[in-house]
Amino acid sequence: SQKIEQNSEALNIQEGKTATLTCNYTNYSPAYLQWYRQDPGRGPVFLLLIRENEKEKRKERLKVTFDTTLKQSLFHITASQPADSATYLCASRNYGGSQGNLIFGKGTKLSVKP
Amino acid sequence: NAGVTQTPKFQVLKTGQSMTLQCAQDMNHNSMYWYRQDPGMGLRLIYYSASEGTTDKGEVPNGYNVSRLNKREFSLRLESAAPSQTSVYFCASSESLQTGTSAGEQYFGPGTRLTVT
Image (cartoon, rainbow over all chains, first blue to last red; front, top):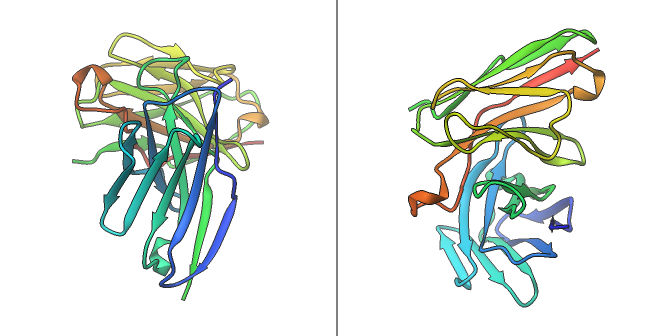
């Protein structure tokens, strides 16, 4: 069955460092991967999308890569700040369902210490 | 633009009681979704509606029913609540992929925290 996994439940880093979060997928080849941010007590918020023909995508301090050989997407936050502390989810299309359906990873909780 | 709104924000039910969670979006999206989020389980799709007038089961539909009332509104009903339905429920919406401009990025509401005792 299609699986999307975020290997780390939690990541702790120091302010100013680059945070790198990993998303791996198995048993399918998604056309794109999406990344969301979720703060405690709130719904996820869409951040970035990368398509399979794009190696890298950037938005301000965020960078996402997509390696179809490794079946992996990396999400980077450069010059991290305490305000970046949140849970980050990756998601991809669920080919078993409607075209818009997504399957989500369980998330990685990022803590940025001052 | 309010985006996606959900009511209520919190609810406590006794086992066997029923209730309806309401969701509305003002982004003119065709597709709407209901998820539940549990610790260690991530977001799981309960039901979705690809367009007005259609609904389909997701990964965990048992114990729930939905109604796509119109393009804006999508409700989730628990007919006989069980403690296993204690969870945080999120509604989301997206453009359909047929528009050609969307890759299905979803916009979420603030959630409903439901406790069933």
